Amino acid sequence: MKIVIIGGSGLIGTKLASTLSQRGHEVVAASPASGVNTITGEGLAEALTGAHVVVDVANSPSFEDRAVLEFFQTSGRNLLAAEAATGVKHHVALSVVGTDRLPDSGYLRAKMAQESLIKASGMPFTIVRSTQFFEFVNAVAQSATVGQTVRLSPALLQPIGSDDVAAAMADVAVGTPVNGTIEIAGPERIPLDKLVGRFLTATRDPRKVVTDAQARYFGIALNDQSLTPGNNARLGRTRFEDWLGNKSARHG
Image 1 (cartoon, helix red, strand yellow):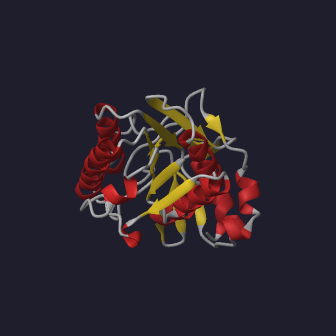
Image 2 (spheres, helix red, strand yellow):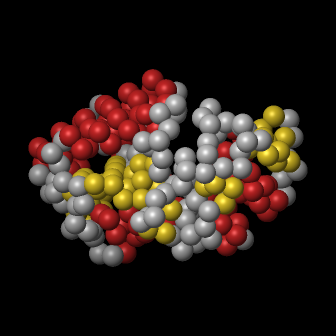
């Protein structure tokens, strides 16, 4: 079947396109670089014509509160309207575990707005909420660094590798719309401070992690339930230690 991937040139989009192509599907990896822009609407109708499934893994170029909200609302409206006009049968979107629990996060408020648009659209859909990617750990460390100190909460995370995200998204894309939300996560729960500490050790980074229960995660307070999935999540196979041992994965 023809499957269009919005955000097809990014980390997940590239892996997803490869996985679906290997399974024999006709894949269109759509992005502004390929002439498909969900903000302006450029190229959308052409890309979606004849498509059975659209998978939206695009991300905002800016994480500033107003900009990210505008991106997901504008992109969502344009994409869903184009899907309705071209007869797409299944809209799949990648979101974040904890989106409904952390309204203090401007990014997650924007993802919640995106999810609401999808649910109200009348399109058959599946929303896939993922935990944080292993590949995001370095950015977490950077955000919490002052000098040579990385101050982090010990709240639990259940991070997942991008290969496992792409595999799950591929299965959802070729499956039946659930008209609801599913969660995906890694195979193990790890405190955030320990997660980053293991990453810094593996990459021989001299920074030191300081555990602080009051430390903010991109401006928001965390507890053990904030970013961890429920009991029915689909779990990836890749353990963090195995990913750390793979230098090519670790360096993108």
